[in-house]
Length: 206
Image (cartoon, rainbow, N blue to C red):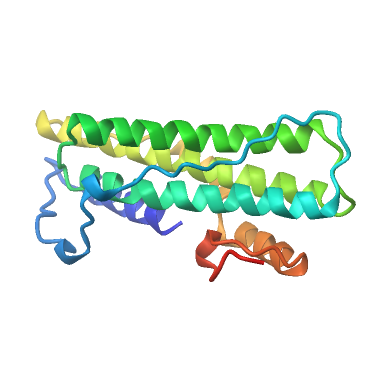
């Protein structure tokens, strides 16, 4: 969630400035990752199963695969998001990479949502699997909306116009994407001994 908060901070700083001008040229230069070195993750969650009864071992692996894929895609998008926040243009190759990451992120969310909706899950997994799906999907949509809002604000600022903010949709998603919901998910992962790299948890191997 740190990226979302950073996005909000930048947006509110911009909205408070009459011309929306913020100097970001000296921010965290030592942490910049070369976008040319970013590799698009090759694995996301996929399943063709429908109307099946899923056993617990498969369900654990499915949740792990979904969350690990989300984490890898999220990390791969970092350099591109940072570049946009710093008003750096992306070349054709970089734009293609970002588009592919975005496409895979949506597929990952849709595939897992369909999987848990169209199959019978083990006892004790249905509600928490839905919570995980809703949280991750809302997080990704929220991130896209923050990025879009930032880009719109920068367009207004470059035109010399006073930026306007409409954050109703974004704030509504705070009911899903918050520390309280994340804590419930992590408690469930611990209870079921599901190892994942998501949420900054150490290790991904069972």
